[in-house]
Length: 164
Picture (tube, rainbow, N blue to C red):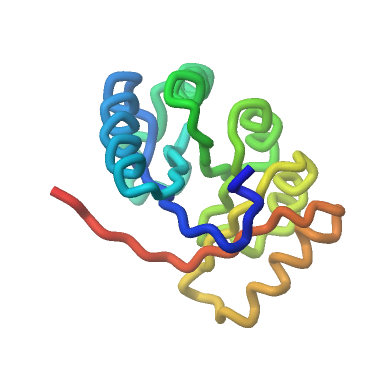
């Protein structure tokens, strides 16, 4: 599978968080069309919940089970890999049977228990580099994942663009 090919260029894109099936399907359909035309492998990314919000009353989830079912539906309907964030160790078990890649948010990139729980799923673990940490220090996050025997480790520098 191309996910394990270290030489592949690919796109990770999607909505920040699962808000509805309609939104996820619309975005996935659009991105699949573009990446198919350009022959770019594509990974659909949407958080099933967002625990890292600035304000207490900010939207976080439509409900974990409902959001995970939508991600499963996107994966099945479009036949594409799925990536979602986890924020707590218990999240890893919730997502492991649905997603292909478990992403550790940048602000949690040094959280040992979370990294180990994600690694133990056997899934690819994508660790986003925190702005507060040097590139060289990311080796320690990777070593935590590798200590479980899981060698499916991606390290990602933060880069965002907004399309309107």
